[in-house]
Image 1: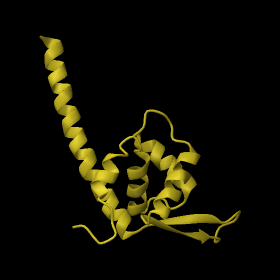
Image 2 (image 1 turned 30 degrees about the vertical axis):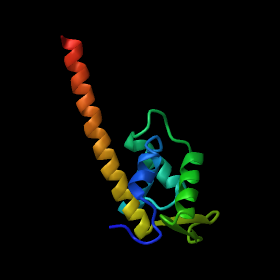
Image 3 (image 1 turned 180 degrees about the vertical axis):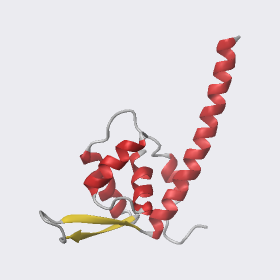
Image 4 (image 1 turned 60 degrees about the horizontal axis):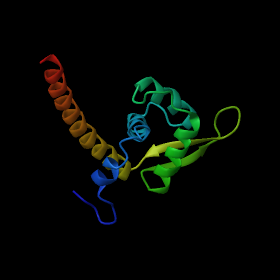
Amino acid sequence: MRRRGWPNLEQTVASRLSRLIEPAVLYLLGEGAAAHGYDLLGEVNSMGLTDSPVDAGAIYRTLRQLEAEGAVVSSWDTSGGGPARRNYELTELGKARLASWVKVISRRSEAMEAFAERARALLNE
């Protein structure tokens, strides 16, 4: 279902397959596992979606872009000791975007597996 003002999410997501940090961040925020950028960093790295470790700058750039696009919202958390930190939360648009990522990744996964099978068959002949 497409809502007024929302872009075609699957096209947007498909054009960003190299940015697998985004679906990981959306998932983690939806799961409630982490809500601060630094907390997300360790969780994203433990998912193993990229070939090299993700740096904090990439997480914060992703969060800023997602917030600018309305997929997440943030507020300042001043409850703990130390400096205030931004607390991020997934919006309805963010949930829809994650659903689009799941569809795109699933299709790509199936296509890549089919390709790998064909290539293995070719190499075994």
